[in-house]
Length: 455
Image (cartoon, rainbow, N blue to C red; front, side, top):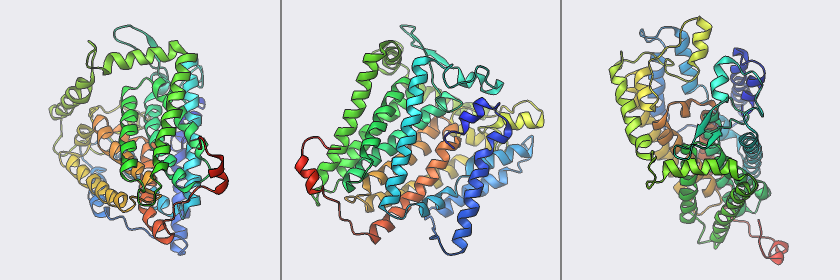
């Protein structure tokens, strides 16, 4: 799924490629549920399922909304909202112990570091790198974006790495950073292999975040670093006298992140400097081009209110009519793209499914976070706390702040699939904790003898 966009860029963006990942996901579901019926996989009953079912029911009804111009919009919308929910059950069964979790986290760190590194190279070399000479028409604008700092007018490109859009790459960096940071705490507490890989990945992701040119990503990554750092200290195993490992995880993450930023500023001052100027000019309140208040409040609220100027906001225009991928439906049915949505996320929900949709969205997401936080509290002062807190934090960011900015954040298949996979893993951790004694692995005698700076 992470590399599907790369094939789409070079193979013409056909519909078969667009739905290729969904076929693979369907095969995973079929295989998984066949194993469940044979009794080989543990069943999982999500505690928030009733609240999710209410939103699911609304989405199903909205497939047949009479205001929709074509049922294919309804099927598309139903897919973008609900198709990846079964990954929650897959994630619950995927992790059976510490070794499974270690492999999952390290493998993700490798992929994240590779994708971030390619994005760094593209930011330096230009968007001609890792993009074909002639992109498909619907991808042309997404793959060749540029920005400039408002005061100094320094122009820079927005890298998309292996994805078809700079926005998808920027959102992936938020996810990758949060999971990598949680992995450092877990691996250090358990003294498991793969820590160096994860720390290198964090450094690479930090540099990619600077060069991606997306202010939202830059802010969310900084906010995540502060919030998770404080959270790790709060939930550290002080009673077992292993809290120093949490401090080491935070310290080493800061060292690798800072080292990467210093290195890129030294080697490529022009490319890095243009992004730094853009961030400082638009994010610092002292600057005349300060835009945080406008982008964080004025513009989204104005955007939300504008949905009430359009038609059918009471009952909606049908699920999928304002969803990600609507241009493919328009191309398939040979009609112009439906334009009923707004950029703000809750406004898009109203445009698609009516005035009740945001309330049902808040109901099921609040239930998920409520029960998820209960799991995090149960795992406090255990080896699983760092990764549990990181999963909870990602779910919160995606379902509220990022959703507030745009519905696309949730409908982005990368974010969506990872959300449900990680939710399943989160709810499996207490079972693993109960089945294996919470013995935080102390360093071996050989490791203690070496002393000094240890990963």
